[in-house]
Length: 514
Image (cartoon, rainbow, N blue to C red; front, side, top):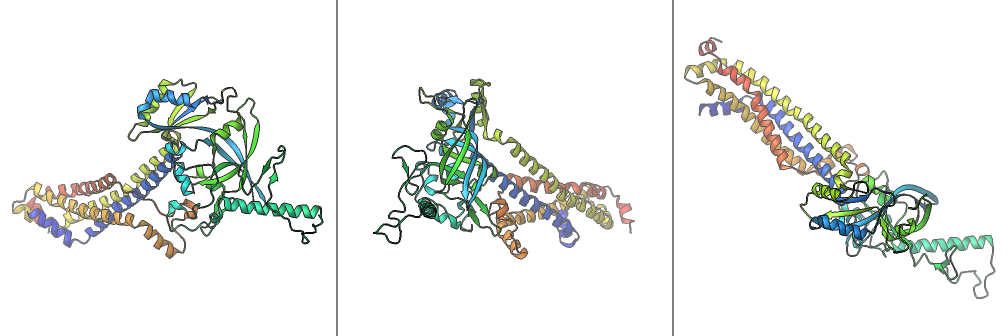
């Protein structure tokens, strides 16, 4: 009982121990906050990478691709059908994107992906990152241009995201406006080059129908294409290809759904030839991953197969480069990957998980978190050395008291228990307060960041850099547990040497100290 009483007395009266408590508290709180933010960023990144790819990618290693994807899907189901939820074929190639914006010709190198819109959203997160609500539904997704209704705010960033005013006119509204402007420009050029006398019933020279359909250059007789009522094959662009963020955080668009773009890409023959075709932008893809948003372009798989010569003329069956596989919940992707790789020849096919495709990035993030934890743990270790120094000082200062306790019958174990209990008390108070402070900081981290940004006059978490409007933070209970346990162990370990020194003092020598 006397041990608890002395521990409580020392804890209340020895204000110098407050420095140790604060050190432990700051160390614990810092580790909880940093771990939560790093886990939040890591989880957010993994979710978005996983949404870009399906659970497994079954690829052909040959340039020609694999013929008859339905037959390959049937063979895959024979091997692991009870573990597969869905599949979708894709065609991939590099391409050059070209479009006109404000009188300038803009050229971008892109990764062109042909997808089946009916099955793509069932095997990946493709649909949920589109900007039209109807396209986010796998049952209604389409490559047809919508009349309107596109998101005018960044849906993933919440209601505080600034409005994307340009998107108000996205869709057929934009296409009809561009068609009218094109017709008026053409009419103006025609009149400027060759004046035409106005008809008697039109003394002001007004055109009776300024929106009349125009012929397709090189088209056959009777072939017309009206931009105001018709579209080219639909295309979905990564939003970073068409959008840029200004210094004040506003999103501005070079092109909108309804505008036309041109793609140039190689055919699948030997030797490959360059082919081009016009497409109409029908939606934007925004995954918040620069790799996808700034480079990915999606078109209907059948159209891309036709343009690249990837259809067998005798059977009408197309070739594909890969088949995306969605596994059932709880299935081990590595096990299914190994099973498929063993069932198909390695010289013709390869199978990989989404983690395999981004292993370098994921491993780098995990290594960064590990190293950061080790460095931050030194903060608590510094607090441990502070406890060690303070306890040595207390032992020296309380030598006479220790002698009296021993002369009254206190054992070595009892004296040692006083200081070990004192160290444990410091650890409990410091780690407990630090845990509460850290969890509260994580809970209100965005409000704190907003306050600091207001005081500094600029945002701490700049959305123009990170493309996030909130700091992602995920509290892992097991991480919090081990941080607190580690702090307690360091506090107790730091008190062992002073406690042993106090326990080994001889009563007579201790009483003669003063």
